Amino acid sequence: MKVIARNKRQITLYYNSDSSIGIKTLAYLKESAVPVLTIDLLKNAPTSTQWMEIAKGLGMKVSELILTDHPLFFKQYSTVDLDTNDWLKIM
Image (cartoon, rainbow, N blue to C red):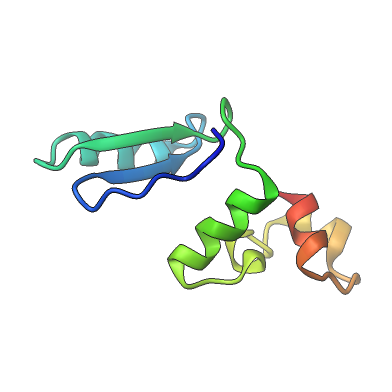
């Protein structure tokens, strides 16, 4: 996965195939009339540039893509001040 292609006639789903939410979302989208391009993050991890592009496309900061209240994240990073590059490394 090098360049994030944009197509207004399809939905692009970035999902984790080990996640019940990802599996349910994929099943829901497959029932829609719109073509779906699926990208399993476990098999095709985006580059830092692609993560930045995804965040921008969603109108979010890279830091907002991470579940910061998860116990593992909180334990390791709660006392650290992170910049954009740090967030990208975590991802």
